[in-house]
Image (cartoon, rainbow, N blue to C red):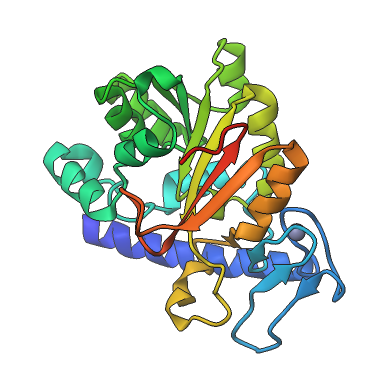
Length: 283
Ligand SMILES: [Zn+2]
């Protein structure tokens, strides 16, 4: 099969999967995929036919109906169907120069942001959650940090391990079993893909006991009123992660939280939400 045909069939497979995921979510009554809240007292809907996202008043997330992206299905979906945009697609992983250019264009080099919000390499070890094949882990290691990754997709994890020689675990529990105790958990454009977000974050913190988190997600706080945010919740992003969600989750942990729209922070863009959570929320 040619590359063009492959891309074409993946696009259709991805659309079919999206439709099935939406229908499965709707069949479950449009519950909040993360905390399970349902009903009009918990979920606020704009009430328009084609504007199908909800706001969960219990946990603060925005979401579209989703019913398939849990259990064993995400590994298949994110390994075989979803190409995660530019820098993680099949061509870029085979071409170092192209990869560097794409990562640069996407603003995925987080070293400066980490140095600013967390500190220099002696501030402690870093776990990159949802690290794909490890471009951030690789960049951090190059800058002198001790960093490892956690990645669900077998295909990407194996590529990072074997081609780049990086340490990447399949889960937070596997990293903990290997004796890892990172000071910081970092994620970038990952959490908005994970419907059961709260339990995944709880699991991360339970296993790794990091003293700080930095999570970068699309900025959606003004999703209802700003038409520019249109594509940030939808097919590839079942969730919109809000400042309100972070406020509640950090409160549950007894941590401090600082959440802000990117753009003025080095290494972040205005359409990103940069959230720091921990015992020492930093700059
Ligand atoms: Zn909820």
